[in-house]
Length: 596
Image (tube, rainbow, N blue to C red; front, side, top):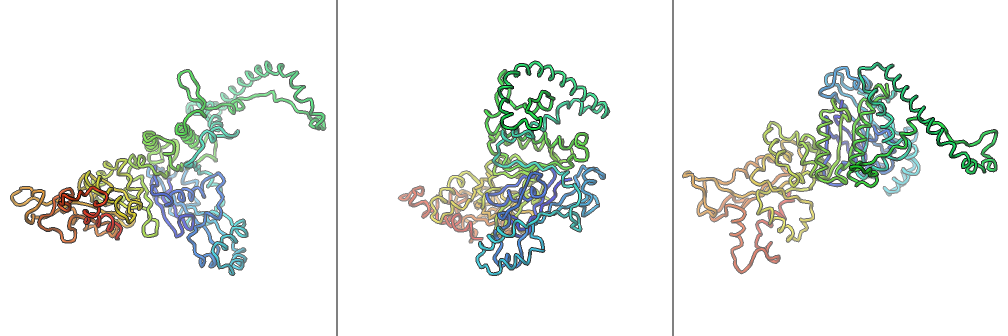
């Protein structure tokens, strides 16, 4: 079983119903800041996170209008759809546990659960009367927060008929959430029920608990013998220690009679019994370096976070133990991680993602989590990921769009492999930027940013990335942005492609010289190929792009730049003249990149 999609309505960033689709194993949410990645994580947590996840006034979409608020009280709705995994048995424990959630019993089965956060119907009239005379939208929100939010209820509905959830099936999901800013040391070592202590209590005597050759009764008998042996050792220890407190105890507790602590024959005393679980509470993590034991608090944040994540994965493994938890064992442990790159060196980011990919796989065979959903701003992580892992969020014409680059290649598997091979750390930035300029080579990579800096329209502040493809490899990359042919999977961003004329050889098979003296057999077919995509968010620019070709045109960007700036008295790389004498390219970059 895995989470196949999440539907979010009127929750934080998403006002209108938005569907985000996931795959088995690892899913990586990428995109610029404030685009909705954390909203998606929070929506999933609102259903599955066992820790208190209380919704408040700020969880409603603030894009609601005054008229909408006056029409009815606002509500939040989140639906999580689940589906059978590829390697899952037909009669798996997953299916049996969520049988009441099913919407389709066929293979693969499908199920869903919906969370609604809304005002009970009996208070609706009171809400309408309270806000009918309010004309300011902030006043409506304030009235809602003060008078009606305490009356809101979170309820769960399952299955095709959306019946109220009546059993404990939701408790069988183990959702572990790792926030972007995390105090790993505190989370590992805080309280009697802290993570390390929970794991120690589970993994103690693991040689017996995991021994499949022994019967359950035999295992329990051997563990009881170990408890008894430890009790004998601890009794001897305390018998040796207690006499040392005989006089000190009298002094420490001498005021108990005066304060009334000995009322009705009761008096304070030290506990003189000690079992193995009491000792486990005193265990702490250290890092062994040769013969030195370094306390965990002296380690770097990144190292401690890796240790903490490893313990969380161990806890997910523990939660699946049917012999330990019985019917309370987890059927679906999964992991939500925000910005795993926090405090991690780029090499560690790569190794961490590689570890997840090797251990999570399809989710069914994993010992730890069945599914992982990650948010990231790190091109190091996206460069190491598969295109199928990526879910790209982008803002396009005031709407948030969801792109799935791994699904955008249709019947072009070679193009997909090509793009994955060339998506290094630098090129992976195309997933995070607002707009993109694809270029062919090093000259453009050096000069276009300088043109943008010299422009006075503020284009350099538009979060535009210049991606050097090191050749005319536009089409494979553009498939990910082709909103015309792939409207449901494409990444919605404005894309400009800057390419040279690059003439075709003549009939005599002789290359044309860098500067033409007459019309060649043809020019760069790549221009027509890009235009044939007919995608409104993709544009291509070249020399004399409107007229196609004129005599004495330059072969490449470098030659054209020279031909447009032949006046020796004015050096084009002076700040005062750079844009004046590159007018064609100024028009291309500064004005036309945003024209569609």
